[in-house]
Length: 120
Image 1 (spheres, rainbow, N blue to C red):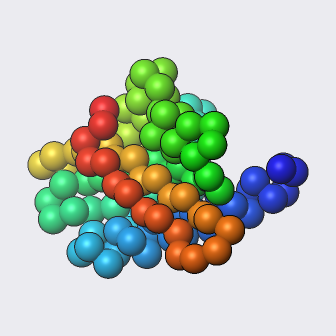
Image 2: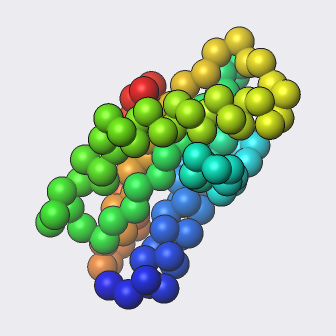
Image 3: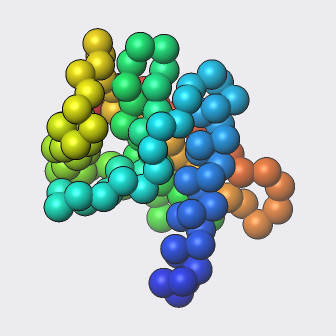
């Protein structure tokens, strides 16, 4: 898969994930926020909880599912990114959670979306 195709797939997956989060009552506050530590795909609010969302998009699970791509090192980076986002936006929410949203886009049919809340 080419770089441009991967980028387009990732953008599509993030849009699908954002739509899913909104459909379950969450409010998307930010998308693709970057700093020196990296990028946060989605920042949302779930009631009073601020949620940092990592979106993983794949076309199949042949080489492992999207969740397998979130390693311990990736979880640690997401925690650093969350702290940086909070500082940059001068926000102190009552609670913070890191979720991973898996989007599998098959050749035919609708994408499959699965969210795991509180991974890190």
